[in-house]
Image 1 (cartoon, rainbow, N blue to C red):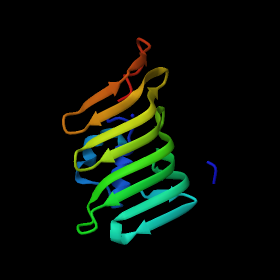
Image 2: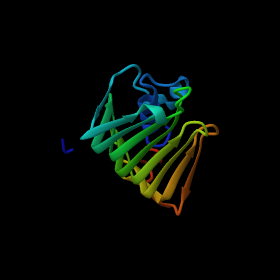
Image 3: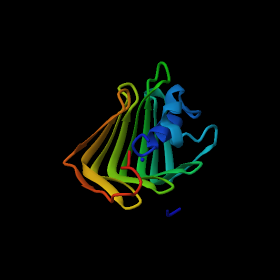
Image 4: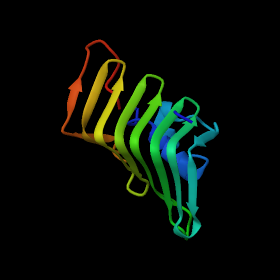
Length: 165
């Protein structure tokens, strides 16, 4: 197969990928929540290492839930092997997250579930319509609804939609 409200929406995807059903805090994601819609994940391969609590999707990974799509070369979900609680979700290589006209791209997207921090890095960029925010890293701190863009560049058009968040 060839084939941003809280920054970029894949927090939801990470949470859902991690649990298969969403998470209690998913309601905080507002427009990104696609309820109980199923998630379809296509990849060239899937490796599950139960003893390590690791599941890795490799090769042209495309994950969809409703209108939310994550594309990457690889997506790894790491859980605590003893409790099965998700620790991290990491997408690597040509990462693209999209929902309608909200788009984010980078070379890596990492979600630290325990710390509640989502980081997009490697030529990170988010845009909605013509408004664009880019930087070396875009870091979203979910607990205090704070976003930090390192090496920030922005192009904003007055009278258009809000900044990508």
